[in-house]
Image 1: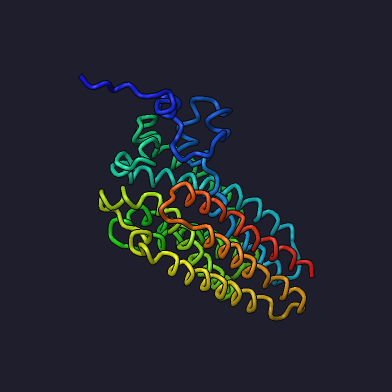
Image 2: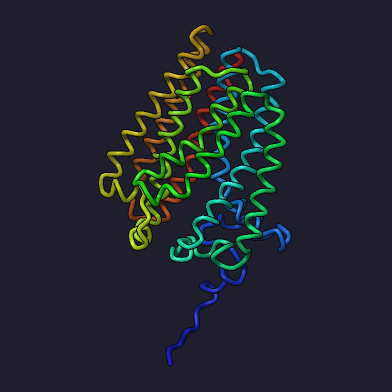
Length: 326
């Protein structure tokens, strides 16, 4: 008879319900009430970088509109705060939707089989109820943002709904993720300015290029499992050419963000414009640093670099914030 005993280290995640790629020592696994943990894990509250990556383009949009106006209004302050709450909720709702649609794939991938649905912590019905609840609360916040922002917020549900299926029909699911994850750049700009111009569109497109950059790095963690189950990604599409492709998206990110800033701040002071242009250059330098550390055959290293993109985006937000007051 085969001995099926495993070590305590192997059984601990299964016993605790902890997700394999959760941040070590996270508050969900150690401090949240036990009954809430499966739902918070569905929302990726134990893996907060995704919330940051959804929130940061929102802050870019709000800060660019404020820099263009040369003032940080109370309305803009509320948009910045409201976006933080909305990003947490909508990232949670989107991830819950993703887990519902991917439940038949997740139990076949080592990194994802510990997620709440494939591991049996919650049922699909419970997950769907949690998704709706998060969406409704986020919608209440959106109602305070103004008519154009509300329309954009409702429209964002389409790319969010499509994204989980993209890896089934295209080698470029990261593009669909970028479309969904950076929508906040348009929404927050519109909420502050009351209108849309081509400047936030450039910002939005820069965000999409950035998303392809960081999510390709992320996808290299699962490329072997993805190949076995037939899931597509830019990591599999680029293969050994990944560094070359990432350099291209790095350059595209910098150029598009710079274009949006130049258009928005053309009538502001030279100092404000120069400081704001520090945003794309700081991002470019941080992304270049990531390239020097990249080893696509090191899953743990890829995860660390993916998480480092929170700082990449916040650097850009910092320069945009400073430019408001110049």
